[in-house]
Image 1 (cartoon, one colour):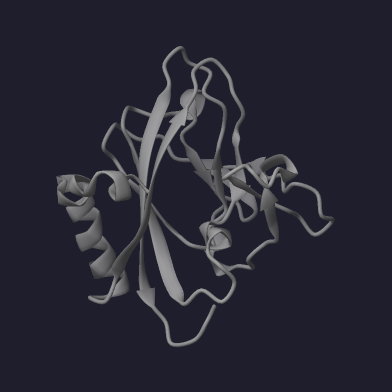
Image 2 (cartoon, helix red, strand yellow; image 1 turned 30 degrees about the horizontal axis):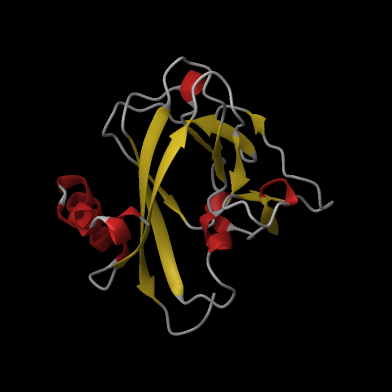
Length: 175
């Protein structure tokens, strides 16, 4: 939550633009829920596992939400651009666990029906297959809370940095 430490982030052009788009998509009641700064180390590191943002919310959460992901430099497959599973926003919400089953880890990984970490094949947009989303610095992806997404390793000599913001609209019933 960088905005907790530096409230000025909410006054930036990128934040205000994403907030305005969230209100266009979700309606005028959309509100800021979270932000997250990410750095993917250079020369390897681990891929970001498949996950759904809804899994980060407490059980019974009352928000329909979307996430804006903004790379702070050009991103492509080689430095860990996001990848998505088309039409996964229709659900279901998979079971998730902490990364490597470590409760101290902040990240989550989706689990398949067999309880093992979910794997997804590459595949040019076919249902159930991953598509990559290279972007220029300052570009943005917007994804639904149930969209399965992750990122590969950063194989370049430069760290990959990104900033994500989540916005949601309150619902009368828990999800």
